[in-house]
Length: 123
Image 1: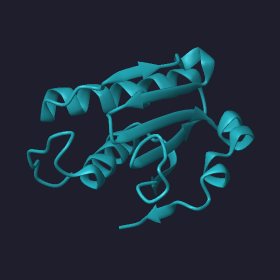
Image 2 (image 1 turned 180 degrees about the vertical axis):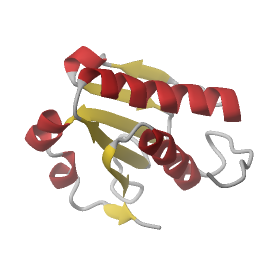
Image 3 (image 1 turned 90 degrees about the vertical axis):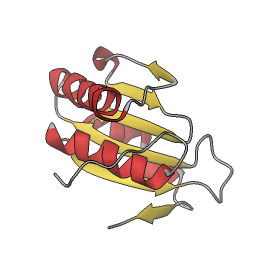
């Protein structure tokens, strides 16, 4: 992983989303996708959507993001919702909502299609 740079939850939303994606990938999250909702008046400026194949993996992904941001950058979630047993967890970082979903839930709810007008963030 690249050298750590100090960020705060409100100084660079896209960097925060990318950092969360890195923490998710550390736990082998599937298909992380960052959507830019800033032009759509959505519930947040960005969504990070990622998935896992089991409840323990969902829990590991969420814990990696929460502890990584807290311990390495001093950033805490505004709120969290769901449990790994619900197969859909949401971490609220204000301008960023992180959706951690079981593969089947992700396919069923298809947030990517629901927010299809959002720009996909790459690179």
